[in-house]
Figure 1 (tube, rainbow, N blue to C red):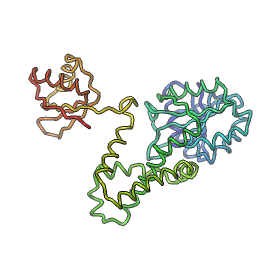
Figure 2 (figure 1 turned 180 degrees about the vertical axis):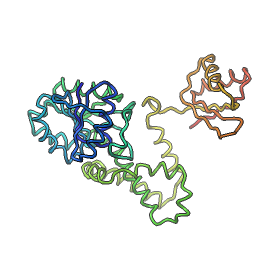
Figure 3 (figure 1 turned 30 degrees about the horizontal axis):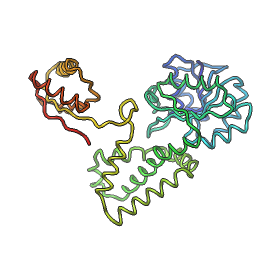
Figure 4 (figure 1 turned 45 degrees about the vertical axis):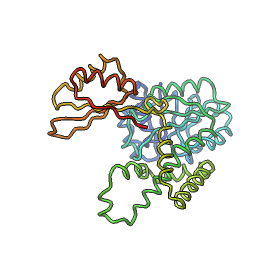
Amino acid sequence: MKIVVIGAGLIGTSIALGAKRAGAEVQLFDEDGRAQNLANDLVESVEIADPTIVVIATPTSALVGAINRYKNLYPKSTFIDIGSTKTKVQVEVQTDKELSARFCPTHPMAGRELDGAEAAQSDLFVGKSWIITPLAETSGESIALVKELIEKLGARVIAMSPEDHDAAVASISHLPQIISSLLAAQLEGKSPEFLALAGSGVMDTTRIAGSNPDLWREILNLNRNAIEPLLKDFQKDLSTLIENYDVESVLQRGRKGRHLLPGKHRSASRNYTYLPVVLEDKPNQLARLFDECAKANVNVEDITIEHSPEQETGLVLLALSAPNAELLQKHLATSGWRVHPPRSEK
């Protein structure tokens, strides 16, 4: 597979790095010569005359210009975009009957609050969803090639209509970006002594507020019709809280909503039971513990390790199903391990 990427930003360069790792030949172009040179150096690019796929990794506002520049240069190539809105892309591409047969709109559900080729990662898409919204005119051959590339990059292909895509990302991406930015804006004018106390709560909830404002301004304006109803619902909830100050309801609804998000392997979220095991700070303790898990024939879903330097003990929290937690607790206790009663997360 030969890949030409138009746009040497975070997503474009990450696609190039991932494709190169998967064995593809890659070349990048960018109007910014510095970004183009850096990205091509990172991926050790080669000159490509007849790419299998051309990835237009530009903002949606630059899509038509990129299409007009490269569609005749690569008359046999399949084209994709990676923009965050799809209804506008559908309308623009369908006006070009020749290109629409070999164009498949896409959107990788991955990114970082950092931008530019410097932030690119070859594994950025591993385990992530990658949405495709094929046009009615998109050929089966082009769709197959696009799916092949996405799977080579380690992502899962999700097919949707452009309208469903824009509604979905408004809920799970665009609204969170606005709320994170609004929350971070509240920090302006606060005492430096107060800000110095900031912990993981404010850091986590404002992380994406550090994203590129020029990029997000375009995205949010393009998807305004889908976002505005969500903002009004949020406004209603906020007004209700101010009037009634029913924090219990807010906290309970928030907890329920959080548990609706997918869990391990993007499966439905599960309520795990956490089994605490105290280990001595000695070699091979974790290996021995997992041997015991195998002997008990239980599946550990996740693990958390709490340990401070020079501390003689460490705490391991094993996430399991409730029956497995009970079974493993009995097994470890019988075998002399320092295991404690499990705790359920409800």
